[in-house]
Image 1 (tube, rainbow, N blue to C red):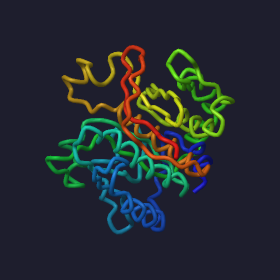
Image 2: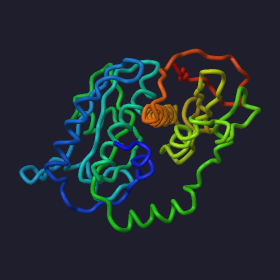
Image 3: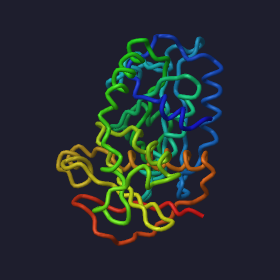
Image 4: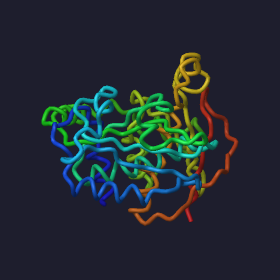
Length: 283
């Protein structure tokens, strides 16, 4: 797929037509999911597509009304082993599936929540050592959903400016697209990545051949938040970080930039509520 084109076309579609997914779309997407078996750091993951068919129109019974989406005709559901990096890896892998669905002409929307004891967990037979932090709705977009996306795109999605997300050497020196050079495009695709409540919690610092990725937490959101702790909500901002990693790597590879993910914390001074996650090292 032309990854830059697909990333720009993807948006959070919250209203779908009532048409069932066509057989070839179910087949192609399901086949793609079977190829996504491990996260970028090696953690095993299982993905499946839940969708009604002409022969089984009750397949989504009790599921289709979930969340803030209207008339979803399918869901991408995953289960990943619970490790220190599982949430980032979940976001990374499932976003591959989201982009494939987008390439096929399908609308998608990430939905985070508590799924441990849900019917989604039952469908994928979630094991004790696995987590299911989010799902993705799938279907054919309505004209209203597309028009709404176009209106929001014209306003720039209310995205954080490039120089507020990416830095040169330290967090005190903003990085401009011109200075980012060939990496300006992978970073811009990071900027366009979806995130819970559009908080865009990723920050990236460039130093030598490394691009260091950080999670800058929204206050009162995720780890350490009393509300999230009481409700046992998944740390979705870590999932968001994984989505950003996916966009960065796929775009870099499309530009024939060779590199790999490594844990090499540069130990630089960080802003409040900011933590190091992983680094991309260019070869």
